[in-house]
Image (cartoon, rainbow, N blue to C red; front, side, top):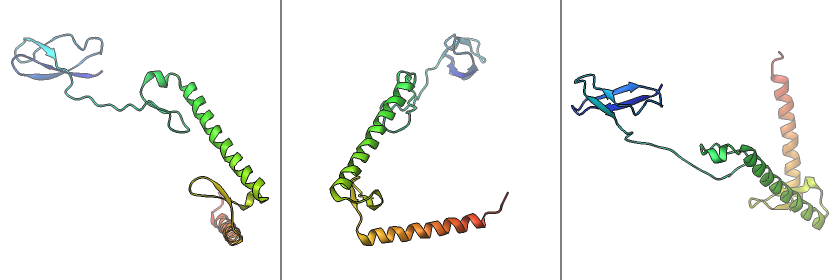
Length: 145
């Protein structure tokens, strides 16, 4: 049960545990016996953000968005698939224009794609081999259960 603060005319402030239904009911002062009234909260804090900004559903605390979570998930999925389809089209356009393979593509910081130079491709291949060997070594080092 929540705790509510009451204040009497004599100046005494006291707490009362009560159900939400009976919270505003005046209470007798434990000091003088006079009727004390409920004190409204001095501070209230909250944060609301009612917009879908990412791939997952947003827990906003606003019931009109939270109760329609299926709509939010659907909208997020639609946005995500749109981004993914756009990336595929960008890659296909670069591949068609250059005749390169998908293994030769590199993503630029701005999100566009380009074909790696031979030196970049060689460095990438070396790094994959090193990573593969490190993974194999790590797998051998783990104790068996």
